[in-house]
Amino acid sequence: MNKNIDTQNQTDPTRVEKTEAEWREQLTPAQYDVLRGKGTERPFTGAYVHEKRDGTYRCAGCGAQLFSSSTKFESGTGWPSFTEPADRANVELVDDYSFGMHRIEVNCAACGGHLGHVFPDGPGATRERYCINSCSLEFDES
Ligand SMILES: [Zn+2]
Image 1 (cartoon, rainbow, N blue to C red):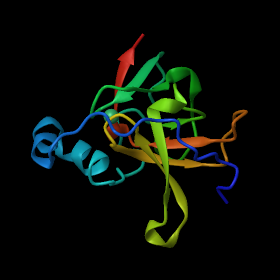
Image 2: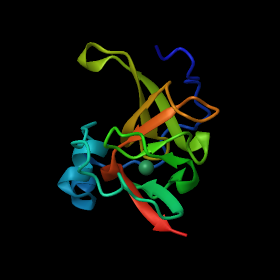
Image 3: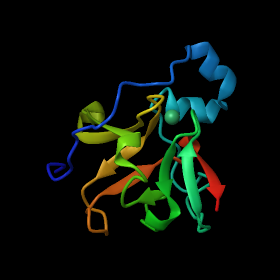
Image 4: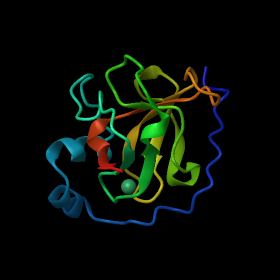
């Protein structure tokens, strides 16, 4: 079902390397669970599900610019949803076969942190729906 999404990455290997202890120190337990543990926050619980302000969403792990408010849309899923990344080179897409499904995982290219998944049913020209955990993001209002 994900065959229309181009998972070819344009990225250098992970640039931000930290030990698990350093990540635990820096991140909240919820952020750690998502970014480092590939967890998923419960739907409709994240800080940015209904965020409507203009601005930039950055990686909560390393500050990399990930998504722009101009691509955010109301998906009804309970997670912040975007039609495309701010810069494709800043995210890394990886095949994920966990839970008996084939999904495409979205990671921060700079620190390797898990952000969410991308699905091929978005409303924009790309047809992509980036389904991202609020926990993995920090919002800068512009
Ligand atoms: Zn990052």
